[in-house]
Length: 399
Image 1 (cartoon, rainbow, N blue to C red):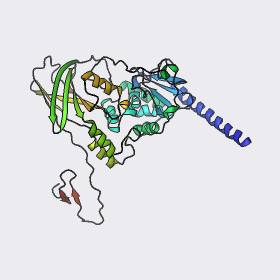
Image 2: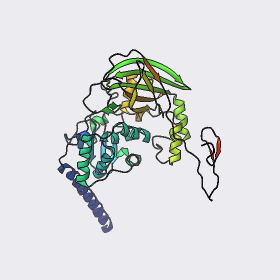
Image 3: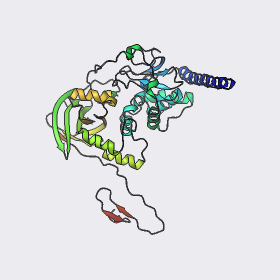
Image 4: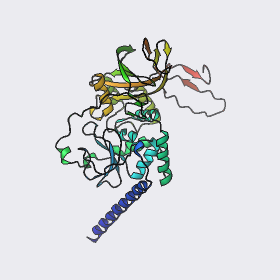
């Protein structure tokens, strides 16, 4: 009996120490008195009336998009959760950090909470693509520097792997919701108005620019055995934004996932670098195109690009943004889709009229795993086999 009491005391002491540590880190952050709204951590009410906010939640920050917020939840110590009301039912809440200190380090690494909130439905390529097309702004850098210097924090070294590991080992059944959620969540959420910005992507935009004007194209083309569809382009103040949609048969996706034993639980984070490289090559939803657009006889320079995918094998984990694209363009959700968005800069201050428009799709070079070799003596010749052509080369012959 005494031994059990001692165990309970130790558990309680550990819980109390954890609560104190959380309060200390969070209070130190609050004492910085910095406006973190530009990194997706704006201040607001500490309680939320959203139907999918867990019971016992204390809101610690709000984004300016779709009611997304971050919170602590009673019973989970220091863990930080992202709540996304516009997600697919059943995927509204995800843990993003084991404690608030790690949460801040993730923000330092990614620059904005939007990347952390969407990791659950992304692969590493999508995650890195998002960071690439959403570089840290001067305003965000100033806030991040204040946080990092004020709390003596360094950026998280492997943010994507960190969040994926946390979510893979998390028991979602432990989250308790309100009666409003338990009685039934909305079957279909209303999508916001469709808007495309030059300085933006599928997940949002920055700056004060106006949305572009959509110009319908409805062009279909076959590229080898691939079916592509170009639904529209958008005329913006800075340039032209165009979406390229690759239609992928569901059986191709299912065969690929079975070959690599991929599932919701196994997202591929445990593979070697060579295996991951091969997976990226074989992924039927993976695309890396280099479109050339000639407007009124003049080649436009590409500014930036991004890609979003729809996987019909697991429709429940597809992002809200992917669902929005499919609905707007009328794409069949029974197929897989990879939607590539590219932004092209006007050659002049503004092209007032599109007279002729020519589009050419080209494939960017892709990395291919090469052979391993070991040199045992000086002057030894090593034979290499080209991974695509299977041509054999010895030493530097033909290279």
